[in-house]
Length: 227
Image 1 (spheres, rainbow, N blue to C red):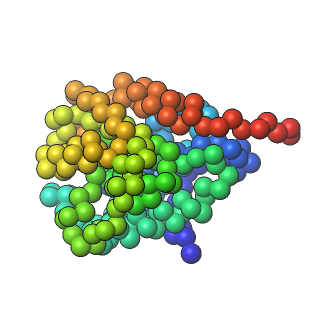
Image 2 (cartoon, rainbow, N blue to C red):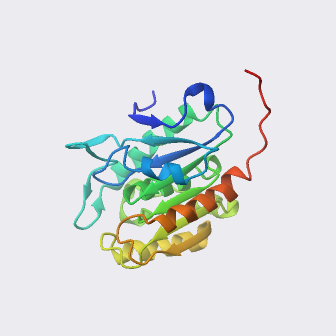
């Protein structure tokens, strides 16, 4: 049985048929409403699903899995289970859509890239903002779980936006993410001075251009139906 998530959809079920689905994954301590403010600046042709992480922290704050925020330390087994649960939900909702892509901020980027790496054939594109990719060598729970070889063969388009002086994400996480992305995906990397651990308007405009080119313009035309 698929994990039951709290989700905000930008389209009613009848209007989702044939549209690209873009799954929005918020960061640590936020909730499903956190990334909705981006939607007006992103392609209107897509359907967006903003998903709430399942682990409650209190006062409207949630996390995808337990995290030591001081060291960004986590259980790799817990991270893998979180990815598996979310992948099951995506399998459940993908049928009416022409494609599925991912957009994650901070910890949501860790989730998005982990989904992409565990199921390379399932996603058209991925956007990661102010976050990191999980290093599978950090724990036995992810050993052999990612299929980076298959992902490299597919060269899935990946947009990575961040501030070079982001005060939250440690340098070793950035270094690993850079090595992984350079070797494994079709990388578009842009730095945004002054963004800190956040998202700036210029970045939203670039994400819009990326999703338009890699998801909307590359989607097969859908037959028109009369209503």
